[in-house]
Length: 425
Image (cartoon, rainbow, N blue to C red):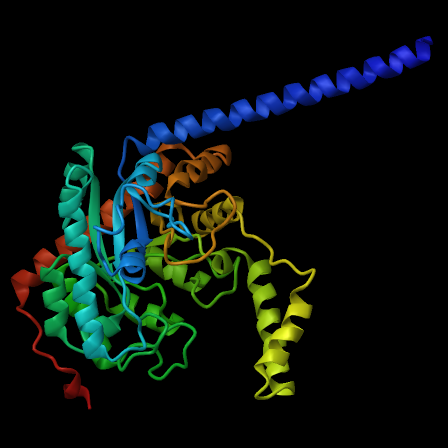
């Protein structure tokens, strides 16, 4: 072997050795961040702002625990994103269960179906008492977490679920509901929804009374799914901090379900919280635009081939061939957290995954076991331990306590509202 060849081989070996050492060091750093994140999440209740497991149980097995054990749902086809084993692995300490029903059904029927969803969460707590306990206050959450269990909280995902009745709102509160999303995807008689045609320029007079009664009760005002003017009206009216249970920053992904910067600034003034979500089209602007382009092409084909669905399907298959939707990533979710922190501060950030309410998830956040990986990424970006404790749970606990204090004050000043929606006809 010539000396030149020997030197070349030696240099190649050194390069590979350096690569291996660099990769090993990077892996060690990732492991250290992950272990550190787990330690932090074991010191504070990690709130998830939105999980649709009750809806999954309705659609898959008609709410029957006898047909689906919540301890492990990975064997299902397709698997659920949530079960007890993975909640524990993800260090979830406080779960806001979404008690959701379709916004397009008659509102009287929506009330009945909401009661079924609430019943499911109560039965979940009773079925697995070693893992779950109903939480109604911030103190309950801390006590339940200290006992080694997951605090179960309930949020209604849409004002259609009260059937235009403050009396129904009060009864939902008495059954344990502690937040209500003001709208889902449909504009109501009293509030405009994101993505639907606006009718009221935000909230109507009755809509404002809904906010006031929620403040008196101590039910958190959730502004995910609402139109920007509804967001602004609700923040103006609310005496308690508001929340966005599962929304991202519109500056990074232009989906109408995300929060505009001017509303983020109002949320800071209100001392509220934005719970960053994992919905892919809310996370990745590239993915959102891909599906907008696909939908536009499909509408074009439907125009070209009216009444010929087979032709539309055939041409869509041609369009789809060779095209793959961009995937969102854990890192992009962290980008949304960065944006909100940079604009309004870390005190106004939480996490609202929307697990089991969406078909696909960002790379690295495939199920509820992956929360520590997101917090490890934040550590890698320079967030402090205290920052992570705030994002995980301290911010949500503050919002709950502030709302509870406002409720105590308002209950001492006035009784239940007697306002009817017909008063505004």
